[in-house]
Image (cartoon, rainbow, N blue to C red; front, side, top):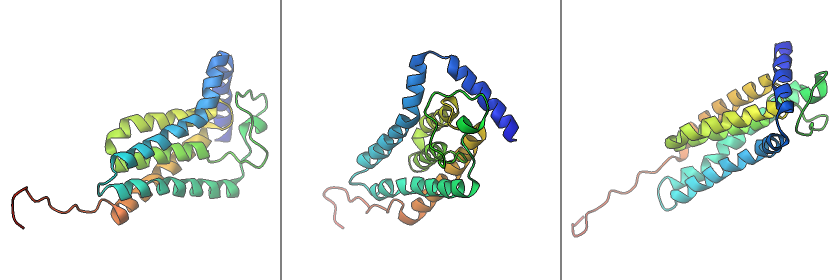
Length: 190
């Protein structure tokens, strides 16, 4: 499997290397800046729910992303797969290759992006059509800039989406929207 992933990595990074410099800049900045879009969406969700029973859930939901990240980080320390920008002969890459010991599998960026998408889709379903394509683009960008194998981002995406969704569902169950007190029409008696 690693041979197939390495071949696909070389194919994608070869295409990336041939793109104009402005594409390199956008890809290199976007691979990290995309996470800020998710931060903004979490903040927007909390802001729009302030003063409602859903506010507690909007504040707790991001903890599911942290949980997914921790699962990914623990896996990295056990698996210890070298980055393809260091391990694959003939690799060309746009982004700076991370330091030795900053392991490749699974991709934390893909994990975080997928977890954010899963959490936001779980607690704020209407954004699913926006957040999942964004998360997939962010995951792909990690291969495009040359710092991950395709199987790293696929595994990271799977970990993030699964753990993120499960923890978000747990948050909904434990902290979920409290039932609002029934509204009493103006002028009526209780």
